[in-house]
Image (cartoon, rainbow over the protein chains, first blue to last red):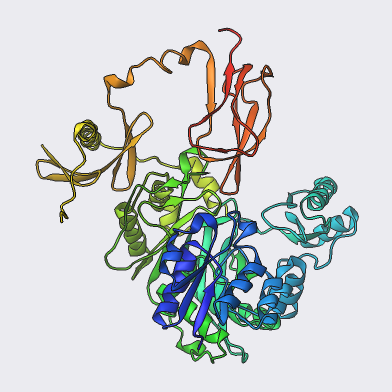
Amino acid sequence: MFRKVLVANRGEIAVRVMRALREMKIGSVAVYSDVDRNALHVRMADEAIALDGSASSDTYLRGDKIVAAAIACDAEAIHPGYGFLSENADFAALCVASGLVFIGPPASAIEKLGSKTSARELAKKAGTPIPPGTEQALTSADEAKRIAGDIGYPVILKAAAGGGGKGMRRVEREEDIEAAFRDASSEAERSFRNADVYIEKFIVRPRHIEIQVLGDQFGHMIYLGERECSVQRRHQKVIEEAPSPFIARHPELRHKMGEAAVAAALAAGYFNAGTVEFLADETGRFYFLEMNTRLQVEHPVTECITGVDLVKWQLRIAAGEHLTIKQDEVSIRGWAMECRLYAEDPDQGFLPSPGEITSLALPGGPGVRLDSGVYEGWRVPLEYDPLLIKLIAWAETREDAIARLERALEETHIGGIRTNIEFFLDVLADEAFQAGDLHTGFLDEWFLRRKKHVFSDQDLAAARNAAELAAKGRKIERVQPTAKSKWKA
Amino acid sequence: MSIIKVERSVYSHLDGHRQRELRVESDTDGYVVTLRGRQTKIKIEDPRAWNGTGAGKAGSGIAKVATPMPGKVIRVLVALGDRVESGQGLVVVEAMKMQNELKSPIPGTVKQVQAVEGATVNANQVLIVVESDAS
């Protein structure tokens, strides 16, 4: 096993990885930007190395600086977390070339799964279902028309080099396909300097269901059940759960999707932890979407229902150990659900809300897991992603997990900045959500029927009493001299 | 009724036996009170606030456009003396990788430009002042 590992990330995920290192008695090294000197992940670490600069492009995205830091402190391996350099094949190769272990899949697998068309081709060869469409870029609008006629409308045109919804066009009717092809290729050209566009059947009201896989360097790979992440805002997941309410109703799908995920991953020469994302339609047909070649933000819900510590296994697998869990030993117990608490203002279009956390109250009690990257008095910087805390509830049933998550959200308070806590309370109270009737457009529809919380007159009177007392307190504080220290010599 | 302060900015309120815990934070124009995760704004009339600045200008057709969040000025879209329409973009501020265009709430003329491209700005900092033609 490793003696010392550098964590090339920040925030809650760096803290999560360092907790595993601490439990395994492995030394931890943090890296930090100028504004992160006082960040929680630095406070957790055994050693910390500055990456001069503040912008991500000068710090957490600089593979050269991070590798130099690892060598300088004599670390043997680098854990990339998620985001930043985690899915960068060049970085993974640089680590290996520098004599360091990259805790993740081999660079070649990251590369193969990085391009959408090559991942599609790979999945198809492995027998993993993919949405009907093309693996190669379209050469003309006429070709698009012919293929769309074969697979049936609606279809979606996608940029081969794409991401983030750019260069995508949904087409309902044949007469619209020419214009859509033109728009998609020119947008792809502008956004990715690559006008290649391919075509896929558009899956109507799909669910986003993903399979967690874990495999060692000797070809043994297992799947650890599924997660459903259909509750998304602008392609960003906001609530994730495991198991999926859909698969709970169609249990035979778990095995099918699990096998398909493992086949696709092995075809790419994959090892370590990874996630194969699928879209599933109402009839239970499912299609390969992409593979995320890293630890996912939402990995804790899988850890809660399987009892498997994914980060510890990532470390053991990277160190060359055998994965000793067999597929038939994996069992799923209870239900887990996660909310991503962000520094953002849901009342102002989810604008980021950086600033000082003036007060912080955190939940506890049975079945609550808190993966936090913040503390009271810390200033949320405006340079990075605004994810503050992941709040996860586990319970025996989905109904109990929702009630527990609601209770934990009520116990949570992050003062001084705006967060999406109330937004979550409103979503969890929704009937369709509680019934598990989800699809990737769920939130767009929900915003139109959202029920805003209404305070009772008694609640408002109590709130006024408290505010008045606080106002009085402020005046008194102002005239009183500051109290002297009790610790007199 | 009984109300006591139990922690810094946390109050326990008893109405008969009915207990409520309230968290109070001051805001730009009052207090934000949180009750079991739910928030409401409470305004307390404070005579010290009546000092004239800002008051009375609401109806006079002057719009002070401020950034709702701290960030960096990416682009200034107008210059002093420009005519602007209601809803027209004035300045683009970026925070946490998100760009936000601040728009003019009224039609009028740009009277002040306090935004400089590349500058870091604080929340509620006034960047552009627009005066309506009627005033």
